[in-house]
Length: 99
Image (cartoon, rainbow, N blue to C red):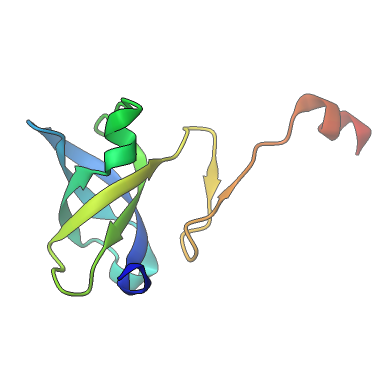
């Protein structure tokens, strides 16, 4: 079942009650597509707060292209590769001085 999951990067546009969000997709696979997303269980357990404007990783199935599940919230300083959804780690000051 997990093989069928499509991972995309998006921006939260609007927050609704009961941990539901409207997310605009940024990834080139489905650019400007709007999804109705809920929080993944692990994010609920750890009480990760999602606000409008946050960049998130969304999982969706090919069976319902209107709904998704938010599985990761990117930090504001993280650079994101929109093709793969991978986030680059910010370099610390020490590693920049050594270079």
